[in-house]
Every structure is written in structure tokens, then in C-alpha cells.
Image (tube, rainbow, N blue to C red):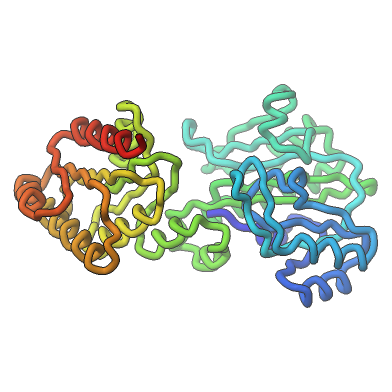
Length: 392
């Protein structure tokens, strides 16, 4: 789960990491309050879940209060298009108005998961203020990477060594920041804590003037306060709707809609569609406790994508029985047809596992536009052929 910069900086402050003063604004009254409460010059930053805001016009400097009000008013409601948003862009609904900071030097510091080594990786660079991907491509030798054993944590000597390699003057301040980042990472079940840039002022103070924090979705049940920070306006509407029904959905660009139970099977399903020359329209894991209601909602989400030309339902019956799933599929399709005639594209269903024979028998006798297959490869090939024919 992602959060906005202003939320990330508030969390950093909670863990003793200094940040520049700033106020979030959503309307003209908020803007007026912010510019009166802060000291010029100001930096006005669009709050969207995307990097590259500056290049897209989402970060601007205002030297006076009047200029800040004008820039902020112009930025609110504007659509920003960055490398990460895609061509449709994102509408700016929130701003962070903050006080500018005199900068002597910029650094990059982050902590992220290293799944290969089962640890947290600290990544740092003296080239702050730019995307770390650019630094990795243009000057990889400037990047420092060290693994952190979670059983030991970060020790002062470890952070002192990093500070020395970066050439940081305020070593004690860097140690406090490193400790705070690690505590935040561990206590809030983060997947990344990034400060970019961490700046050194002419007075040798270290301040985080931009930050990004993301969290492990699977751990949000332990952190209702963090879950409450999610901005649904930043989510894909289909993904937000899927979340309401405990469905895991990610939109893609293909024409084969996928409905699968289990993340591993969902990945395999997308792979085999690609292998036969097709393109999946989505990742959709309906989970192990699939019900008729969840199947109906999944169909609605898939069909809301106008690019979908065929639906591939790939279910392995383990905890749930395939005949129960088949009944859910049939009832869902009948319900959607009677409500709004939503389903007018072919549906290919592959059932395997517990009571799969009964399930396939129900599908074959349903009289609906359902193509029942027993082999995953056969089902995938059929979906690809049908999607290609409909696109001709």
C-alpha cells in the first residue's frame, strides 16, 4: 500500500527524523491557511502516487504568498502525466505546501526488502534528488548497498560506516535518522522507507525534504491506523472495487480476462496465455474461499474492461469444491444476464481437483455460453484463439 508524501513525512517525524515544515491542502481555504502559517519561499508539490512529478510540472517554487496561492490554485485539479501514471495521468486533488530549505548537499537513503537474502537492504547514494534508477544506470558505483540482519538491527557502527562513505558531516544525525527508518520499517510492516533527498543544510543539519513509504498489504490488519491512510482516489477504480469484495485485482493491457483462485495459479495462468501468443487483461485472484457472490463481483469487474474479449476462469478445487464453484459461475452469469445483459462474450472454464467432474457436468448442461475444458493448456489456447478472432 502506498501513501502520499505528506503522510510519509508525518511518519518520519514520529520516529525522530527531521523534516521541513509543510501543510496539506485540498481547497482554497487550506491553501490560504498554509501560506499564512508557513514562511516563504514555498515549495508546492502535487500529491499523487507517482515519481517524476517535478518533470511533469507537479513541483514548483513560490517566492511570495501571492505567488504560492496562484500556483497552488492552478495545480489543484490539474492532470499530471508522468512515466509512471501512463498517458491518462492523475488528477491532482491534494497538495503539499512546504517551506523551502537551503541545500548544501543531497543524499539518497532507503531501506527495502531483499527477499533473496531474507533481510532488509539499506541503499544509499551521494547523488540524491534524482530517481535511484537513473543513478543506477548512469553512475552505479555511487550506490552503496548493505544488508541488515533483522535479528541484529542497525548498530551505530554500521550507520557510521555508511555516513563515512557518503561523506556526511553530521554523523550523529545520520545515525538517528537510520535508527528511525529501521524502527519505522519494522514496527509498521513496511516494504520500503525512502528519503530522497535527505539534504544537508549550510548549518550541517540533515533534513528529509521528500519521502516515500510503502507497506505490506498482508500486514495491514495489524495496523488499522496505517490502513486508514490509503487514498482510494489514487487507486484504479476496478482495483478499489475488487478490494471491497476481498478480491486481488491488477489491471493489465491484454484482451483475455482472467479469474483464478490462488496467486500462484493466477501467475501461471497469465504465463500460459502469453505462451500461446495472447495477452492477459488482468491479474485476478478470487482466493480460496470463493463464493457465488464473489464470482459475480469478479465477473462485473472483468466485464467493466472494454478490452476483454474472452474470460478464462481457471479454478483448482481444494478447500472449495468444483461443483460449488460451477454453481456459483452459472448463477452469477444468469444474474448478470437478467440484470443488464452484461455477458455477451465467450467464457472458458477449466475446473480441476475436488469434484471437478460434477462441476464440468453442471457447466455443460447449463445452456450458457460456457466452454468447459479439463486441461489448462487447452483452455488457454482456446481463449487466445477466441480473443484473436474477435479482434479481427
